[in-house]
Length: 338
Ligand code: KG4
Ligand code: ZN
Image: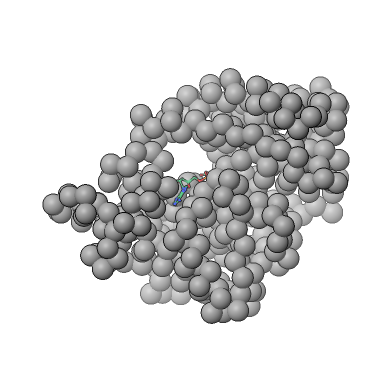
């Protein structure tokens, strides 16, 4: 089976080919980030229009680079949600109609299931069951994963997602959009002792998160400061330390409560090196192991969608001829393939 995956849920157009025998044949990614940067965030209408222009040319490039043809595609997978509705509609429209034209089974994939299973594209694959921390621009979830489709949500954010908090703080500190990676770079130069921000919701039981409080703390501290370059770096450092420590505390709790010693970290924020170092250290002490996707598959990409599509199509799942776009869609609603 050879599955073409299409991802267009937000501001990245991603396409990939996954082959049941050979694994991932190739992938292409086009980021619209620079287009949205001047507006300080994603402009949904611009995102949809750009996906329309980029998706088919990217598929053509992918086929060329992988020396393959559309005729060899035996399954189609596209991101059906959650995400921006206009952006999703582009991938859904193209994916579903291409699947119909080729006469191959087609399926709409949950974007967060894509992130969740992205580490399974690596050589060192975590065995089921495991715990997953999914941290992206729109979600912060702790999930107990018993198998494909068997997801129990252990913790969720009550307000901002982790990536969203990074982006808002980045914007506040004048780092542009999206701010996550730039903030990490700046934080590396900051003094860890200059400020201390709270670790929200760690003083009470439970695995839920809240990040809007730290963001407010940063805003107040920054506005009342001398706003020098040194202070900017120190505030970035204190913010990142607070987020990293909060996530480490919750992951430790999840490992201890579930007795599972494998932890998967995925989603855009999983690219953060300070977070990786801290989580590896925490897990090591608990004789546990952390699994990450390779750097290019931390953020949105087509490979994760092609992979999940392959897993579900292989199990005989497929959609009817309607195309699906679900901007809101809980992971808990996903089915278990037979
Ligand atoms: O998974 P993703 O590409 O898109 C969504 O599904 O949302 O995640 C994007 C998020 C953005 O908020 C971005 O700022 C954040 O991931 N991010 C980072 C880093 N790289 C990307 N956050 C912290 N540190 C990073 N190195
Ligand atoms: Zn994502």
